[in-house]
Figure 1 (spheres, rainbow, N blue to C red):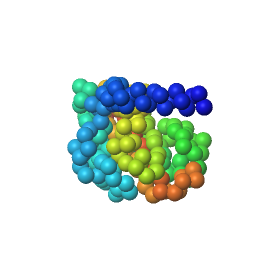
Figure 2 (cartoon, rainbow, N blue to C red; figure 1 turned 90 degrees about the vertical axis):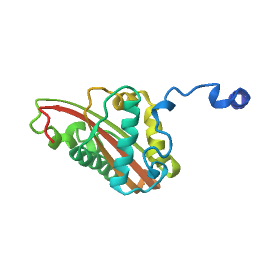
Figure 3 (cartoon, rainbow, N blue to C red; figure 1 turned 180 degrees about the vertical axis):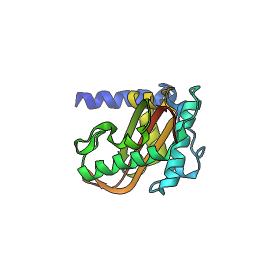
Length: 189
């Protein structure tokens, strides 16, 4: 009860001090304003092409506003992201290595012929308004590890995985998202 009263008192203090202006969100400038990436950035159940376009736009907005070069979409990484999400759904687990498969297993085609490489992955899922592209990107930007992937200067390419309207971990209507980050040498498309 005491903790609840403390929370209510803190909430009232923040509201009287101007709320959001009292505690500035340092990551707000990295999230594209609504509509910047098209009308789909606040919508659910997108077609895969729209989902990929919106997420690459949101990602590159954060990167360019951090002084980094934009990432190029890579369709092999898109396929890797979709494979990872499908495995999460099939195995009923939210993990970077679903069904016990090694993390890098979905990247085999992308890595073929590479002498060196760098990989990263962000995954997320949500239901309702928490599953829109903007909400997913906002959550990633507010997470240190996810934000680090988005803002890693060494990444050159991005794949976006997206599954909508899934039954996942006991929830209906879930949307799952992934970002597959990569850089490889020699570079092959």
